[in-house]
Length: 593
Image 1: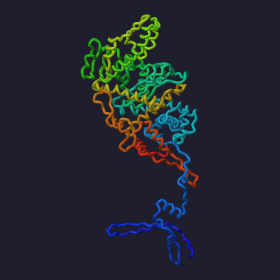
Image 2: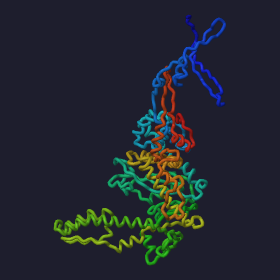
Image 3: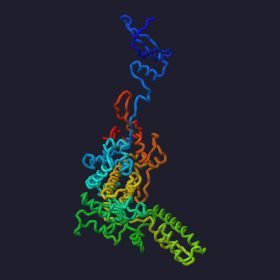
């Protein structure tokens, strides 16, 4: 038989016929054929029938006959590099949406470094040197061009950013505190502290530690926000600065640097004192200011006791089921006093007091037993042992202690305990704002909004941004470090709100019918916590957990077999990752810039 030559190919033949039942059926045969010429005619020779083979095998044979070179699947491409991308891409997208790059300053190397520091503080907070190393492990370093930065570059960028603090905060104040954005003209302010490692920072001092770090040098910093808790400005103070002094400085900033008049400043008790109120609207020459500021704060316990004494206005105003009343007092002329009583808070404080009293008695009982048994003798020696424990739970004032050379007697001062318990659940707010502008419930709501500043402090100090402890020694570096954390908190504030559908955050907390009552989570938020998964079966995550999930969206450098060039490709995003970008109104980018 004469051998024939010709190109081989895969041919697919379809055949249709109608069965007796009337059903139309289609059959396909897959053949390997050779085509050749016989004289002037084109002939086809069938070499094999592939109809019984799997589709993948047929496709491989067909590709081979077309001249394609087949390689094992694992050798078709080579992944030459892979970097986490999704988390930094999402935070960078939100920063761009908020106009943060332009807010920091003019484009350039310093701004790119400063922006990278802020984004890094959100995604992976750490020391500046660890951040420098981490940049090379994500797409952030390569895309912002900061992967090759040195420690000196970072410190120079921090100095550059600190020089621009006033301009940055003035723009944030224009966005969020100006009359157009903030018709109520209300701003919240509170003070916190963080300890320092080292002893050479000029701002380091010993003061009241809100971190419970006794014996540590610390700094203090005050955070100014709008009424929703959105950060606007931050100021750093020496560690021994009192609340009233910090309040005076932030008022000067708002009035003089931001140019905002007739504001209502909301601050905690002990911050807006009578002395600060008297000086609040006085110019340097003692004359009244043309743009007077209002304020909302709370009375301290001694002032509340005075209002309750001798059948005073507070004692008579709140009784039975009533939990909010406006009262007046000659001690506060020209001011409105809004008295509140929270029964749940009263019950909680009573329980805690009893627990602490019992704990103190438990510590004193062994000392009394030792004295009675003669194992501890002498009034001085017994007094030393009592002194070691009686103030541990800060209840010593509630005990009458009698010490002799051979005995210890401890009795509760019940009348004093009852007097303190009478104040449980009571607080009194003071403000000069007229009722026509802000009624009683609105005053209570404004004061309770300080919880948003406290929430920001939690995010800055521990939950998200890890401000503490502070390792910098130079004053301007400490201020720059705190500013970076504040700007990162600004980013986090918006990200948490945008990503609420993906996290356990309460998207729509119910507006309380009674402003004095404790806040409650919505039914939807409780359902989230119970179900743990959304209707599509995806798990709800914490804010930090969502960032970690986004980090699994990597950017890979791919090189195809037989070529020398590489191309960048993203891994296929999960539905949750797609939704995270949809919620911030941004596509998933291949590169940050």
